[in-house]
Length: 132
Image (cartoon, rainbow, N blue to C red; front, side):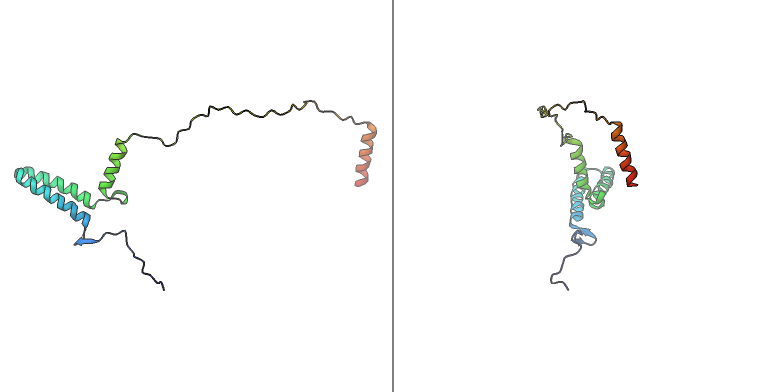
C-alpha cells in the first residue's frame, strides 16, 4: 500500500465545456470574433465562403494533432525549419600542426646466419630418436 497518491493521466487536458478543452474553446472563440467582424463587413455570399474556410482552419487548429503535437506548434516548427539557415554543428578542421615522430635507432637488416655442421645435425637427430 502506497503512502502517497500518484496523479495519473497528467498529459490529458481538462474538459471545460462538454468535450472541449480550454485551448479548443479558445480557438473557437477567436474564430467567433473574426466571423462576427466579417459578418458586419462582408456581404452574405462572401461571408459564407469565408466562414467555411475559417471553420476548416480553426477546426484543424483545435482538433488535428500531427505526430502527437498541436497543429500550431507543428506549423511554427515547419516555418522555423524552412526560414532558418542550415547550420551544421560539427565541422572538422584539418590539424595544421606537425607532430614529429621520435626517431628509433637503425636496426641492421642483415641477420647473422648460424652454420650447422653435419656433426651437429647428427646429434640433434639422435636426441629426437631417443625421445620417441
